[in-house]
Image (cartoon, rainbow, N blue to C red; front, side, top):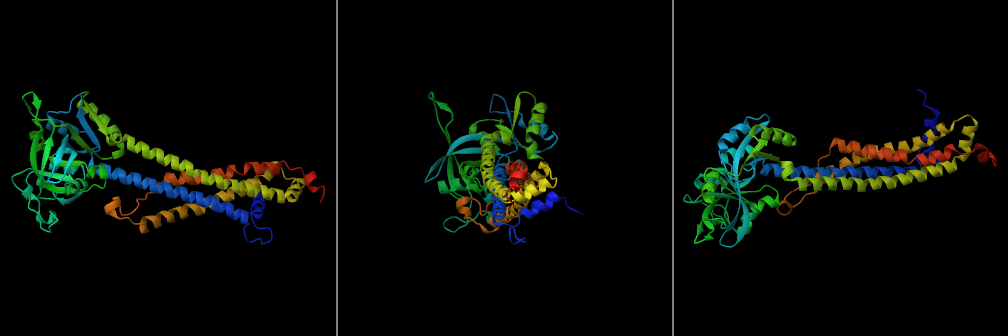
Length: 428
């Protein structure tokens, strides 16, 4: 198969002047610039996507995919029937009632303001990953602290295996919260609700002791330092809610279809109920992450743009050096379009080679980071940097690099195409 003469001449111009088997230094620098730009882009986008998905997994492991609440009130009644209606909706895996209140928790050494959630242990397992996140203890201890198996109780600071009290209801704390309070499994704490019974025209806080029966670690500092769990029955008694709950949490098949499923839930339950998916509940966080990823992509594209100036410089030098050859080609009948093709091919080859080397280099960089860069998990909550490369990101990076390289060839190619062969050969 015979290659077009434009391609043969264009590839020849990329070589060094004297050693025909090696590429010129300028060509090498141009390729290296594109390579580093592509590798940096893939590495950055892979790490940022990894962190986003790791954060998303931790959020969805602690909170439900959809929260259903009654409009205008925080007290949802007749929730058993609502749970049945919700679970009958297609693509819904499970539903569980919950109570959500702010309280104070006091121990012998500290006081902390936290979120207290009342849950049904058997249903919570189906909706969230709380059981999987249990570092010590068990969800079964919420109903009866003595049900926590000895092998799951861990050891207190004294080295002894604690024995939870049977006389008090159980409570589960986040790891950071338990450290701040200075408590462990078997220890007693007081839960204080600022909203209590009214006596002598004043509201009296309600206080009740609980026994710590579990400590969970979700991997998110915000959850581990501010969340606590008790059984749904105890929460209803403590807050005087009767048979009411705050809302119902729902788990679905596809987390990315949660919004659409939420609309179906609202249609099935009626206008008095609203369903908010996990993306709505964490909109500010994920919008910020998306904006950050977009801005990092745009900033790192500047590396490729800088490399494109090397292409412009390289092709301009080639045009100046090859004026005599260009004039001869034109005299032999080469059209201006053919001359432009020769030099545009040069830039396209530089972009393709640079991208072809940059993509595997970016993958190699991420592999090294993921496998050899470790952290102290007790400080950073992660032991390794999460990495995930999306095929769409790779295509976007490769396409942008090749396109920028190709666009950089227009001006030098146009200069070569408009060269007057008479002027170039006059003094030859």
